[in-house]
Image (cartoon, rainbow, N blue to C red; front, side, top):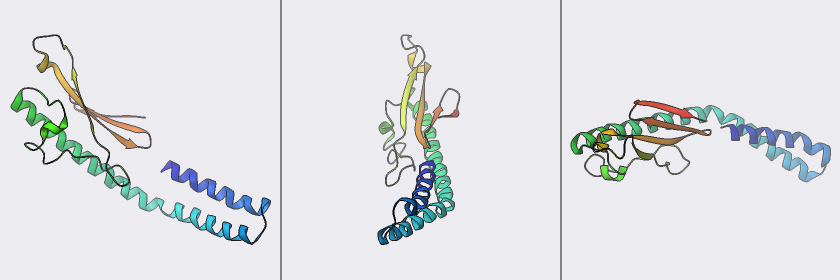
Amino acid sequence: MMLQLFASLILLFIYFLIPVFWISNASIITRRILGSTAVLSFLIFPIMIPVWQWQDTTTKRRADTIIQQLTIYQKQHGHYPDSLEQLVPQQLTKVPSTAKGLLHGRPFIYKIHFHQPDSANALANQNYSIQYYSGTMVEASYDSRSRKWHYDD
């Protein structure tokens, strides 16, 4: 969204500079196009906010489903799966992706962590994290040990 705002401001800046440096029939047409594009890009902001909220809510719901299924898998097998693909087809019909993205959702990043990998009880000391790109250079991550989401920018 910040990129869109920045591009809109640049379009307006160019719109006001054109009559200073370029005067012709083509400059009038160019100014009309730039002005319309800049106004349209500002008007689209009220639409972008509900879309962003929908993407965020849908992504959180999908992540919560993965977290629930990982807990079920761990209770059944005594350890977490090596990848999210191991949840298919018993726990999930397919591995969900985030709702973030223009045409295709971005994948969730799943990592297993061992706190004492050399111990005889290494499987009991494992936890996992799920991460995804939340937008605007923010990475969302869930840690199974703390059971909390954390957002890094």
